[in-house]
Image 1 (cartoon, helix red, strand yellow):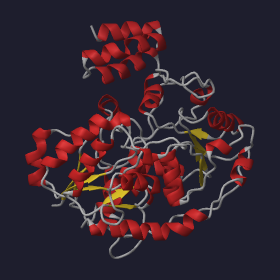
Image 2 (cartoon, helix red, strand yellow):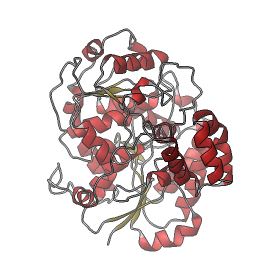
Image 3 (cartoon, rainbow, N blue to C red):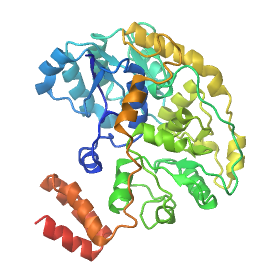
Image 4 (tube, rainbow, N blue to C red):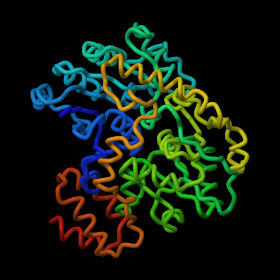
Length: 443
């Protein structure tokens, strides 16, 4: 049996209840992580007996001997790991990887930067990045980076393209092969059913435009992605953030929540299946829109930082930069500013480069006999057997008692520190009746 240790919070073959996912943050803070991980799971599950071991974003040295004995390799998929907030995590990973004896391959990593940043000037975490990359290069042929900007950053650190790293884009784009599914782009009208995704960190003009679209199209859906927004949908807590952006839907009392137009998925395939019933996807979330691409529907991305722009440029994704968006535009006007053809023209070449990267690192994959893989991949069959979870059930229509029960499930295995952290937010968000029930439960 082939066993693959993989950087992931949850395998698409695991059935884990919502409360555990919330308590342990198994989506890594953003459910978009499930999308790029799914691309790897599908491509690398070459047979029914391939077993994946998610690392759950933890790097316990106590498990080193077990991993060395049982696993064939360690697949490391990052997003924008090169950033100040991840220094401690990179240091932990470096120590962990140095003690592993199995191949360790980075299948995608990027740098977080603003659009006006000159990455050649360097960062305080440069030495931390080099230590991590050197540890990985001791156990792999090449590092895969997400875009040309990250490539230039590695070059500024002394690494050589083609020898130490290569640009491959994001694995989420390649899980279904060399040919992207495609459907006709229709100009939305009042009866259109489409999805909207957005980040509270996007510029105000972008958020105002997207929330306006949600109001104007009553059959549109909002698909949030942050862990904190999962809290809002499931428990009724408000989405607390540092931005002053009144138009962003942060409370369960917002009409978008009240009308049942908010969907949150904890399985990539369920997410893509839902999107396959949409006509269009638009928003400022990278993987929310890549999920739409893999579902075969047109999408339009509104990038606002360098980590998004380098992926947009590499994959030629349909987009309009946030700095160019007029919040008073109609959706039709936004669509008129995007190019929906380039992505399909460059995908085959990008895919071939990605497959070459996998093979240089001696990673087996499902595309050896056919560039689009088998009609039904081993992962497809396995997921069909276990069934897909539905969208996260909303707290909107719960009675006080039902909501207290839901909170009990979440909190019964939590630490006292965790309960204290959320005590004020719970008190401010739930009814007095619910609070009384909670206090009785958690004395």
